[in-house]
Length: 443
Image 1 (cartoon, rainbow, N blue to C red):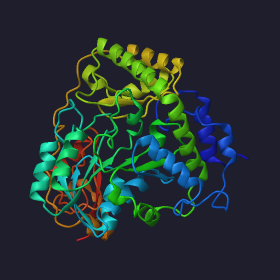
Image 2: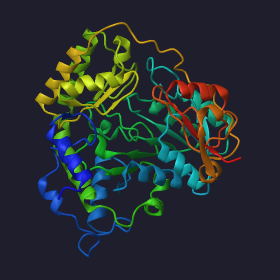
Image 3: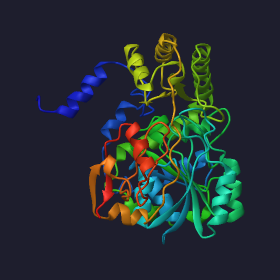
Image 4: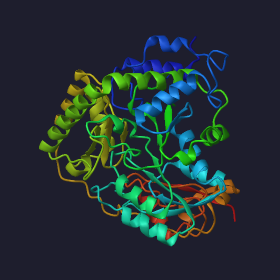
């Protein structure tokens, strides 16, 4: 049987035996083998995800106790399904949402489907060169003051590089204005279990979308919707069923239940060890002049500013692979690795070896990293995403209305969103980052 390109590609990749510092968080080691024989469906003995009055409900209740919230729901449709449900619960009839400009495309597409209008807040460049930075509480308050009919505030924290917003302060602002705080916590599910609990629900968020498979022993696609605000509990299953598949994977859901039990038993011992291991790698990097993000960050995320020592992130990724390490992500400046308790001493030894092998030279110039001014929104994301569009050469796009987001990395901030007018400055900025075309509405 030779004609199995994907299957064979996966087998070939596995044979390279890289230390896997990328999603999923189980690193190919932590899922019990017996789980893979449990690919069942909705049966009298196995419950149904969107009705959930049997073992699924009990498993969700156990997860809610773990996170200390009134309700936790399983998702076999990834964090995307949790984001869709959060937005549906917060603004079921549409309306305005104050949003951080660092945002996943699934949220943009959900806003289009639900008829939501984003009111953008730019992050402040306070995390170091080449990084988006953080949305601050003062800017959120200003946006809410100018948008009295806002239905919610929506933020991403932590971001891909591990940079964390001050959720506690932003939550206090949201409570002052009587709106819920929704957090895309895709990369921060594990924050609950660190030596200091940094989970957004602990810090005051109303709801969080937590992509459990990124950092915990969960199969890809497993996520939790954590609801800390009782107002949103009763409609939560209905909101998820509006978007979710009617054939959710029982393997994924079972891995969520297994991971919860693993955390209850092992997290208190495992995460302090992980934090210490990551701290050691950061120290080795710092000794060689390799910096990470500044300010409050996920203590288990390894983000290395290689541009600061004369190497692009992509070049760094190639170097790390020669040392048997597969990173999670690389851009023009940074290399990102996701570390979990399931990485071995040998895995960390390889990372340390790779860090020591980085050639230290003159910093790469990072001129022009700041994105252009926020463009004018001339129509809603819904009208733009669902409208008739065409793809045109980027140099001809000035003055046209974007039909999809464009997000160069770095700095990781979309410079144009659906419904916004593309300016000449945006065209120049995107060309600099290797964009050649743009999807725009037809005239």
